[in-house]
Image 1: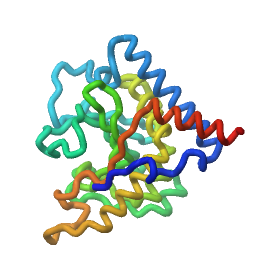
Image 2: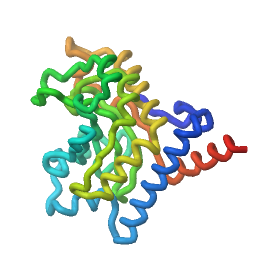
Image 3: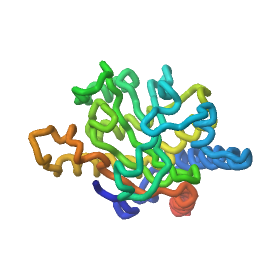
Image 4: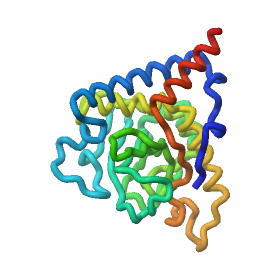
Length: 249
């Protein structure tokens, strides 16, 4: 696993003005979602789990995942038993996994992509995993991370392909919660440079990993989380505002 810091992520001031503006608008949307939930005495995780009286580790929430037939974007929330990872990178309540199904690949990306599906996956056309959002017990996003293929049973695509898919993730309906869907959409834009850096680090880790047995590296249970970065919504917004100011100066 590779832990990324700010020095590993493309400096925001080097991004285009249009992307900075898009990230700023996304951040405003994320903060609005969090503010509205806080005023209602809730948070993103509590809002999503509200319809479920019981919360079980490993189960997907909501049942059947959230799927947008328009964009073919998908996500779910779940948690692991604490002893699975030994909290080697900090405690969490659970995390969101985000995906784009292959039907949602734009033509120009599909032509270049060569998805490598997990042979153990029951899904006949597994999606590409984009990034996971780790949530603290306070209901706030604490980290972003990527995983090995076996973790989600995804169709593995190299980082340059997945980075091109990021902009196509969008949940366009209101089920099961419009505010959670809006928050998820915004997070993948607000932290796009971080996600892109994590994906490239993921590929580097996989390329350098040597399984102890004849197991394929993408199926090696000894490699689960491939790259990770701590995040803070408010700090990211401050960096974006500063970068926009420097570009306009």
